[in-house]
Structures are given as structure tokens and as C-alpha cells.
Length: 178
Image (cartoon, rainbow, N blue to C red):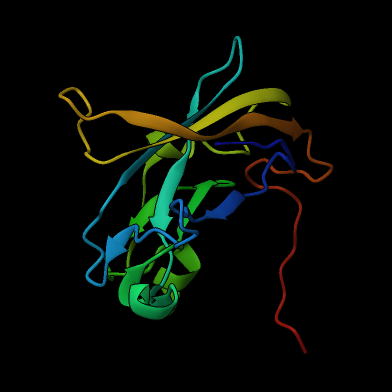
């Protein structure tokens, strides 16, 4: 379990790549090559007097890794990294599978659908100050039975006021590079 403190500005995506190792220093397989999960994650950032903001998770790339030595050497294919993040601003989904951002969606000719409720839970909307966060993992999605979860990371997330105008309709003028 790691205690880690971070500082970000309002309107910046907060993201970290995590992987876990067992007692033999072997990186844990988070999901198989088809992205069927071997473990589940939950996280939350909280601040007194403010709406709690969920930490979101997405898989890293599928990789093939050979780990260990001698007769204990094994080759596995799957996902070894998970990206945890709080988005900077608008959250939504794309009609084209595998496109996670509005830019990727538009480039692929898809339709971006905004999730208005989730878009309120972003770093742009977070109140400046010190937030506490915690990330947990579990072997099942529903830990109400005999399964348990454990904290794998916690600490503080200091959100600083942005020096840029991050409001809708800000005065940015975009142009095509020459």
C-alpha cells in the first residue's frame, strides 16, 4: 500500500498508471488478453463540504511478458497496467468502439454523447484545496460476500486554482497551424 500525495490545477486530468507485484516481484496480470478482469478497482476523492469525485479506471495495453527465472519462468499475455484518473472536463461516450475521447471519436467519424452527470465530477469542477483520496482493489466486483477489498493507494490530492479561464465560452481562439 502506498501513501502518495499529488498536486494538480483545476481543469487538468489527474492520471496515474499502476501495476501490482506479488511477493516474488512478478507483475500481476490485471486482465486476460480479451480484457476479462482478474481484479476490480474503486476509488474516491473527498473533501469536507464538497461533492465526492469518483476515480475512474481503464486498462493499459495488452502485452506479452516473460517473468521469473529458471523453471519458474512464465510467459503471460494480458493487461498488466491500469490507468486511474479523474477527467479534466466533459465526460461522454463514442458511437465508435474503442474511442475514449471526443477528439478520437470525431476523428473516427463517430458521434460523441455527453454524460452531463459525470461531467460535473471532473477536476474543472473540483473546489480548490486539499482532497483526500483512496484507491482499493478486490477480486470480485461485489465484495458483499466473502470477498474482501484492500487499499492499494491513498493520500492527498491538492487542487490548485487554474490560472486559465476554464469556464464554458472562454476566450481561446483556435487556429490551424501554418
